[in-house]
Image (cartoon, rainbow, N blue to C red; front, side, top):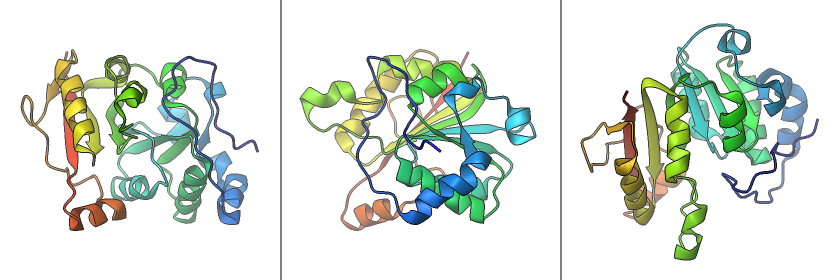
Length: 231
């Protein structure tokens, strides 16, 4: 199969593709498990009944990296159905390989740009929780415009959430946390679950990654932001 990320020609991307070598196991995972877990932009809107064989709360994660924390959530919350979006083939390969070995049925994966997936494949008012964990902070000021969390993107997400649905952000870069807080506090149709201008404690469902554990040992912080769709 073609394991290059799917994308459409657009002026703004939600990611930057970085080269990465795939292991033989990750390559084999696409041949063995992509037909089970893989979704394509060409399939159009996701229908929960035909995709998962049931109607259940849906969680969408944008940028799951190597998939370790998403896999833990899929295992821990089997009453929910998860859709993961990533453009990094090694991460997608590792995730579907691990999910396949565990015979998990409540996960599907896009190897595509998140903007394309949301525009073409996700029904409005269909997502119960949408999560973006540790997105690239684009540290240099001249690169801030490349950040994923922008006012227009936040409103795209608002359209996909159910009323009462939760948008969950997390970052380990304090300037980005401050920026995201500013964007979210100004966004229409959202309520800060922790209270206006406040960060939230990490909810139990978000696993602590090894990277995060190392950061905590070095005194680095992690900031979670949880917002509920209102109206």
